[in-house]
Amino acid sequence: MEKKKKLRPVEIEAAINGIRKKYHDYRVEFLKPPEAEYLFEDRYIEALKARIDLDRFILDEIRLVETLINDEKEKRALEEKKQDAGRSRRKASAKRQKSIADRIFDENRDKIRKYLKFGLEDDDVYEIDKLYGAVKEFETTYWLDVEKVLKKLYTSRYSGPRRELEKSLFEITLEGPEGYPSSLVKMRTLLDRYPREYSVLQREMQRCMLDVSFFLHFLRDELHKIRDDEILDSGEKEAVELSLRFVHNVIEDFRLTDLNSSKLKGGK
Image (cartoon, rainbow, N blue to C red; front, top):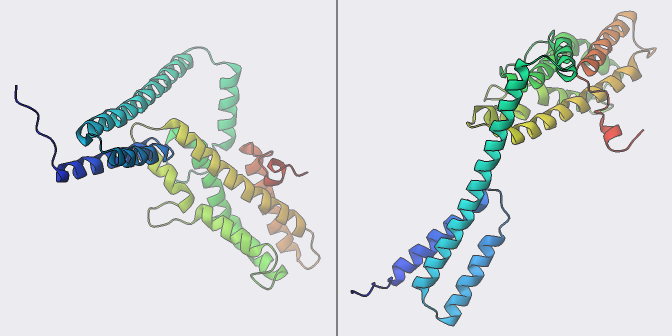
């Protein structure tokens, strides 16, 4: 039987670099810490020092990294299977008589139905679409009057809350080159991905919900402070009152009452 030809130095180098790439891809794809890469490099250095057969070393390392990758793929497939089963159960449940939770869900949807959508047009993120639409409605309908009042009260753009309010508002409503504000770009990307990573999408929805809620609470607090300022005339006070009422309704309708930065940080 012909003896297997040993790898040449150039082939060994190519194989080692290939293994490095597999470990790198493993870390990136499965969001792993870099320890596996470091351990490989340690084993490679020890193999060189011990002058062991690198052909055998390379074969063992390829098997090891491919085992790590396959284990993670199996875990991911199992998780996706669980998610699919969960969605199937939810669909089956929807065909049965509505529970109390279902009715509460529908009632909450009815409260926010009156607000315009921002443009995500996807039922998985219906509440976020409506919430961003509500803030957009505030910007187009109320912000100009509020801004005039703030300019009157705070002559410098860098005094008072004016600059921070403006910055936060436009981070939510100002569309970038992708057609969405920067805070929604990641969500749009997740919605376009197939199959959908629902756990990641849920975390992104929570982040967006918190960001908008913090802004709305900040805005409501500042409107409360200025609503009765003696320097304002009756028309300006009415504009502040209308804006305050709109913001208050958004907070109530989207159930954001307790999503206040001061409360979440342990404030009173």
